Image (cartoon, rainbow, N blue to C red; front, side, top):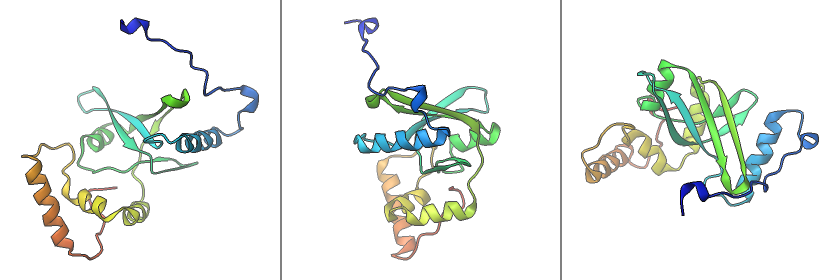
Length: 172
């Protein structure tokens, strides 16, 4: 079978103008809940597109961690390629591909860092292993091998030795 022969009808999601809420954010909230209720593997997963310093567009998958009238929130390592791109150009887009529901949402706009307080609050709620990983991972950087990364993780675990893990200054 050739790629051009793959086709189906996209009717599951449905959208009727008369049933749309006045505020788009209310519809997004409902669709986000529908995606979670449907048991999608990553209902908060979205593709973020940024403009790299060399002018190329790059996409990557992130997890949405919050949204309200101010905007949509995801967290990252400030030393990552994603953060470098956002420092270069603060415009980005997010695409939520809820394919199983025949729905997608695309959002574009200006990106800004979440406040220190918001970042601290979210970081404190993460599982301990994720907190340790935020200190360990040198996102977007090459690593020697998996064993070296695992050793860094264990070294960081020992560094915090059962105590609270503060949010790294390079993460938010």
